[in-house]
Image 1 (spheres, protein in one colour):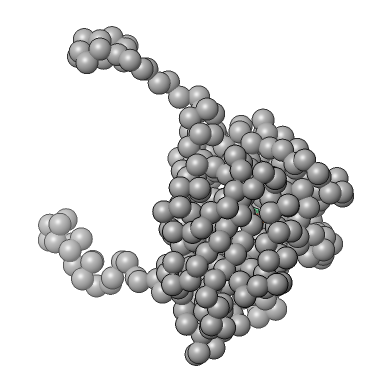
Image 2 (image 1 turned 90 degrees about the vertical axis):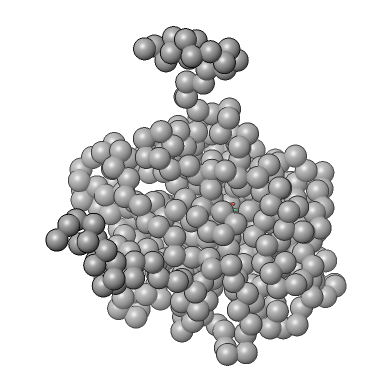
Amino acid sequence: MSLIQTIKNKFKEKTIHKKWPGLINAYRDWLPISDKTPVITLQEGSTPLIYLKSISEKIGKEVEVYVKYDGLNPTGSFKDRGMTMAISKAKEEKCEAIICASTGNTSASAAAYATKANMRAFVLIPDGYVAQGKLAQALVYGAEVIAIKGNFDKALNIVQEISDKYPVTLVNSVNPYRLQGQKTAAFEVIEALGDSPDILCIPVGNAGNISAYWMGFKEYFQAKKSSKLPKMMGFQASGSAPLVLNKIIKEPNTIATAIRIGNPVNKEKALNVQKESNGKFKDVTDQEIINAYKILGKEEGIFCEPASAASVAGLLKMKDEIPKKTKVVCVLTGNGLKDPDCAITNNDAVFHQELEPDISEVIKTMGL
Ligand code: AN7
């Protein structure tokens, strides 16, 4: 039989691509929904867990490092996991408008899911501190964007008060359905690895995602779908590290604008995760973040946004503390395309510009 024929037969035997129904339908039994809940989905979830050869080698000691690449969700960040739940439940409760404060990704996701649900979306953002891709998304998905001359923490105070007084549902991570949706990432990690990792490294802003992952790991562990629980390592940017310094940061600052948050709303939950998992909060400098960001791009072929690279930066920083043969998962929360300005400014690429359109010029430049 010819090779082509063999391949054709193989494809006939089993379908390679299976339709993914979105995480609510995939994990229905694990989520607070009923048959009455309208499922508002963009088929989020089922993102890849990718082995990192170069980073694993840098850690050594037969440590295996993987990334959970949640930047491959429909709007390019993990927020879609929470938003499918928050918006579906808001729809079930007949809500007609939603609101959020955001460093960018929440606003992009909220805007997309609100549009899908035929609701109005109001998003408050810190003027000048939201990456271009995220702002572009909120506008294209049709949100009403309100930029304030103040940081995320200020914006969150405002939207909390508005949602208390007016019939507008708050979809920041204080909304409990957000964390319910986001916990499914931990389920997927366990399913892909066959067990829980030993260590989870994750960037921390409002500390919703670290709390959601922990909830997911605990639920699967209790259901005997994993044999252990991971140590949860949360990483913040040095200029914006309220959980590391144990105080509110009034003027947070970092190149990782997604986690430029000085007063995390899920602080108590996060402290509990740290205690229960025997984990830690640590900080990484902007320089360390950019270093990890570049390594992921040029050595692994993975493009994430700077906030996401904080998880890998943190792992590289605590390299000496990682025991032999452990399995580590770093969460890459957002896609690199979200922040093109950061990418153009921070790379080591050779970029020849303004050449004459002449083959000999090109060949000369190529060094041939
Ligand atoms: C890429 O979009 O808070 O610790 O308003 O966009 O759960 O807050 C974003 C947070 C990590 C931190 N990585 O997650 C927002 C927002 C990326 C992010 C975080 C965010 P949490």
